[in-house]
Length: 230
Image (cartoon, rainbow, N blue to C red; front, side, top):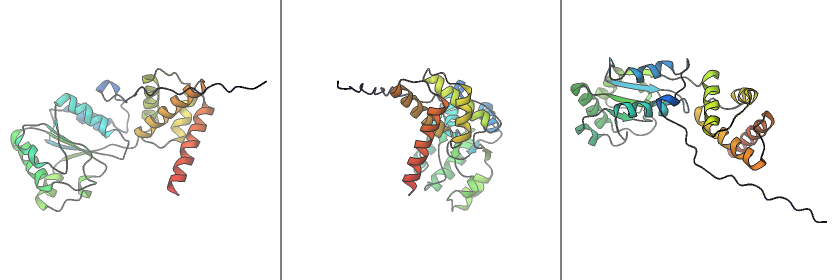
């Protein structure tokens, strides 16, 4: 008698995107100051605010919340000049690692200050570490309000994982969340990636997401990254 292996179920990619609304925002000690200043707009003391924090700390989420509230114009850090003629508010996401239109940023900051508008920038670095050579611009950046966002703490990472699973209508036991919190990179982007991989693996196996499955997926990701690093 011939054994027939049942066909492997291939899950459909339904495009589960993380929510970037204010209601989706989880607030803990690691991001409380940044959330507070976003919520305080338009009553900012300084018209220019910088949110600085590591990759995956939630800067893009906060920027999206502020953009939705302020209807801000998104500006490219490498080509800021054309925005100077607009009324604003303005948003520059992920500035500081690559080249900056220094003259454009200097004039934009001046325009924002004179018009009473607002400029929010997000960065992985503090402004003092940006590749800025224009002294007048460096002076303007020193006057900006810079708020640090820390790496996700246990509470934030747990909340994000629960929410990401809930977005996919997947219920998981607390021991799975505890395992993931202690074994994955502390970033929101990694949390989104691991939830996606676990959901896919569970659908393929037609099984629940257990601690054992989570461990196997985390190990596979770690080994894949190690091979890539080599």
